[in-house]
Image (tube, rainbow, N blue to C red; front, top):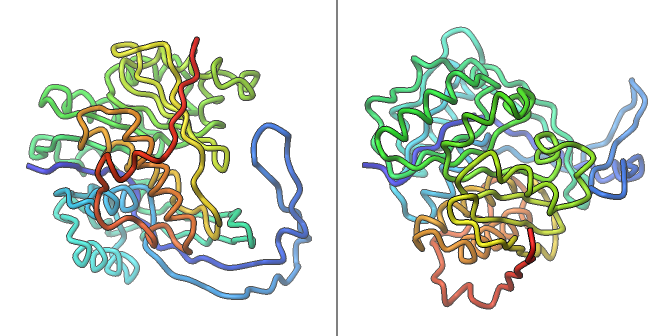
Length: 337
């Protein structure tokens, strides 16, 4: 029996430190922290340093769970190439069970090139490769026994997502999902019957607006008011440097939005911060029997650790802190949802 099984991508990340990018970065709007970068085709942009690491939502979340000491497995798909073998070696060293990792004989392993500014803002060029070719037959649902299933993007295949959730519920496994834009692009009508059966839904602010409507992006209460109707579980909305919010969901609703500020003092690289926050939140719920405040504190602390280093896995806490250790981290209640 596993504590956690993570489902999602496994990639090779190449991180380029490009401190000159902020000179060509401009804000998109006043609500989010989003910026855009503009440069001429044919430009030569100097790279100050380069870093290599294993990434992807599947490996990132699995690494968090394993770092906390939980028995963890990964379900993912890689190519039959040197990058894929590098990922398998990493999983072995991290003691993440890799027996459910499938090797694609046609497509290459997913690969991303990430450009970083001095503030940690990133632009990623992503080849999704084998990770986007996940089939239902690649997921051994009958064999999996776990307390939790943690799902990241499945390339927009809602049939696979629905089947995983259905089997998990039948086997009394709890389900958390941090969907990607491909899943969210299906629209709330298609996602509603799926999300109603999950235990935790994790989104960033812009993803939440994809579900609730772009007109509500500036109003966190309006975002929650709509999204809370899609699930009976916890809902988490992260907001980058501004912090993160969570509610209990319909079943345990107490009319409060819980807010934790960002604890990051310095952001070197935001790659993987969302994966770290989401998986840490779920690990916190698991450790403390659904304590939303403990889960938010743990997630905020671990995400702050990650963004202080280059790469999605450096800086992650090596053991899960106690309630007493985290008690000084402030969590506020926003009443009246």
